[in-house]
Length: 95
Image 1 (cartoon, rainbow, N blue to C red):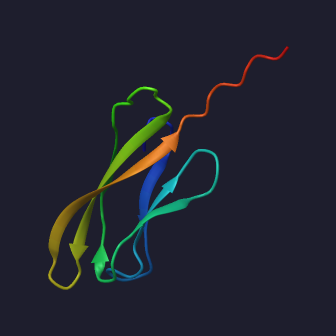
Image 2 (tube, rainbow, N blue to C red):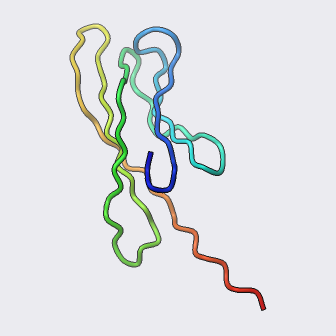
């Protein structure tokens, strides 16, 4: 989970490496697939890390690290993907 409450998780069909996806679930809105793993690869652990915001600071970057195993050979690798989220500016005060 990142600081905004967005949760990152893996989902798949039954069996190793069957349509595996890395998904994000923001606090508001529906889930969104951010990565599709190749057939024959599965994942177990994901970790989200927010990168420092650079000026002008209107985008938050969360780097998601996840492990991936080749089901046939049982060899493991670590990958990362960046998730960019725009910061919604505050609404002006009424009046």
